[in-house]
Length: 196
Ligand code: CA
Image (cartoon, rainbow, N blue to C red):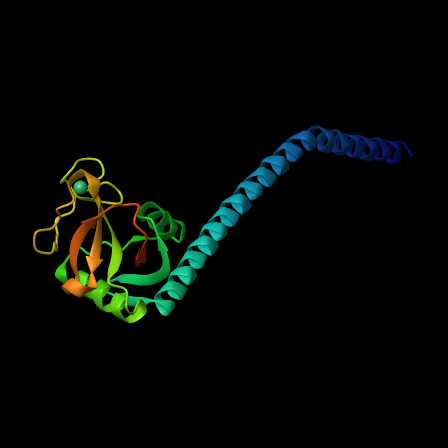
């Protein structure tokens, strides 16, 4: 009988001890779980951010493909013509809004590409804006980012407009050679998109 009593006491002691232990370890487990949850949240956020970036770059690629399909693709660039005549600044802003810049030929190959595409897509149009200007310093022609350009294709006696004419255009009737022009003139334009 005494033995049974001892066993019962021992059993009760073990149960209580176990309860006590599980109680004392609960907050720790909670903390662990919370930090685990935090980690999972962090991982999820990183993954969502990554997916979001991928979706955006896919969207950009799709937009670029649309541009290339509608326009033309030459020398790692896509060109797309717009026939609503605009001032230089408006044309430039329109190209930027579409993710490009005004066409800025960097070589005779690129200039020929713009000229040929312009002839086809803007028939009868002799003058097309280029992304080249000397607005800041007279005679110092730069691209739309303000970076000096190294390739020029000026027509004879061009540029000749001094401080009055600070924007460059490509002249189809001069076989694609350039001339300076008053920036507020209304011209059709071609936007250029660099293919990554
Ligand atoms: Ca000028």
